[in-house]
Length: 202
Image (cartoon, rainbow, N blue to C red; front, side, top):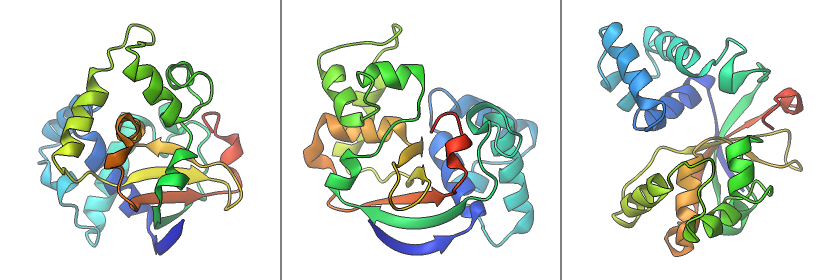
């Protein structure tokens, strides 16, 4: 892993929401919230990180849709003392990244929590809990077209600990359906906290 620079929590939040606005599962809730608050997608797609009011709004929005800062949903027992960095990973490092400890991802990856293993099942048409794998192939199609995605967001305890996906499960999985499309260096955001073990999904 090569560290590029330290970034703010505001930048992580902006990247998280930029990715999830197009999520089949969470995108509608985000868009509905924007409409209710009379905001446009621009506040997520082209965030102004120097605008404190924008940053506060995005923080509150991530709290509303995903439980950030509220000790709920995805962010239940998530540490408040995370430090965030922008970094790059190579292909071999990406292979070691793990899913969150969640029933769907555990089953899809044969209890390994490794996207590479999940991709093998997807290519065998294995479906977990009756959930279609179509979305992974749709993302792969966009990857092949050269689409640029927001940075995948990862978390860990320290440089010697396992690294877990916070946001970007489907994108990483799609890459492993055809690994030749994985860039030699993939840009990520990674957060560190000695308290990350308290997050039940870690």
